[in-house]
Length: 293
Image 1: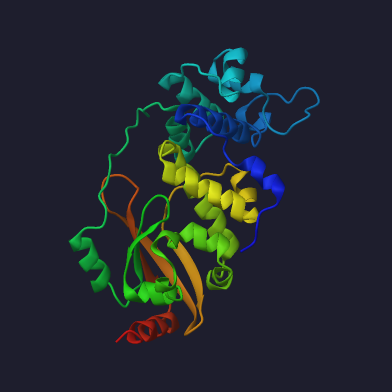
Image 2 (image 1 turned 30 degrees about the vertical axis):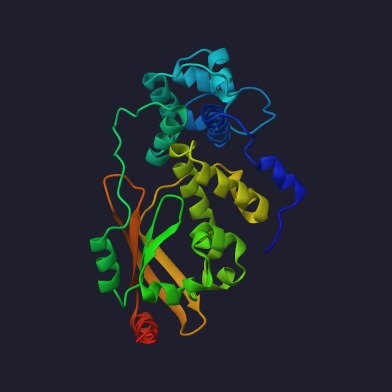
């Protein structure tokens, strides 16, 4: 396992109350979004020499119709009241997409007027039966922290055998960033790693008070320089369908289209099913399934 350089220790979240951590994360997120937008993108003139990229704080305050001092305090993680109307104006001013908007409201601890789903269940016996019956298609149940909650046999064999890992190590992010064999297993490793980091940041905003989430973040920052670098970008993204490629040591390259089934009204627990994208992959998946018979 590669150890992160000492400078990565600076990225470890400082101790503090959940609300303090949330405010610090909110300030950092606002700065990252502000710095990526040019004045021209939001209809403002580009006046004067700029020492940093993106919008100035006073320009964001102008777009949101709030005081410059108030907005500065918001980025500085001061303990101030934030209204739904102001957050909505900031989201529009910073050109946030839907995922970024939800992330903003979650960090501010304010209910988004568009509403939000409630809690969802863990793996139930019917879900367990569904996992098994989906074989030979690989299928797994994950929570928002990327813990592997449930899986079928062919999914385990696709990943080289999950039985080799202790239950508390069965976390997709942890394995992807710290297990060397997964660099070869995940053909498009860099894209997958960045995507998981962005999804985890969204999840952390909604679970900032939960020790398991903060513990995983600290472990990843200390163990993986690649994760520490990706975390600094403050990227956020939602979970969607897509394609993924695996290089399995037993059967070779497999190309999948994957889809997600939410196990409740909130996008927390989800079942991900991998569907062969071509005849060769279909035959190789059937090989994997037959190895357990």
